Image (cartoon, one colour):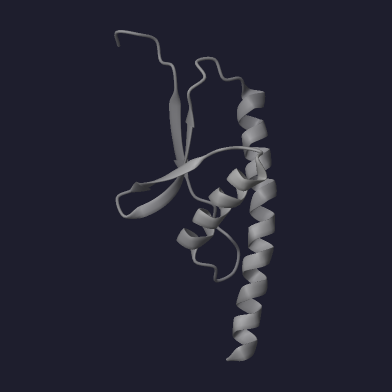
Length: 95
């Protein structure tokens, strides 16, 4: 490498409980996290599968920095999951 590494990328997906559509859930989760102002993260595709894509541009990230992102992510994931499950329950009641 002509220069030291300055960033890294991690792609992953949150797997919600129940019958929630994983792709839709992850897109909504990403937007919810962004709107909360806690963290900004994007998504990309691995083949045809959408995934959350965390890119760090900080050349010296520390473990607490990454831990804080995932604390925010997991905390935010609980809210959309509750909302989505509530929608699922309402849909099932109408059937």
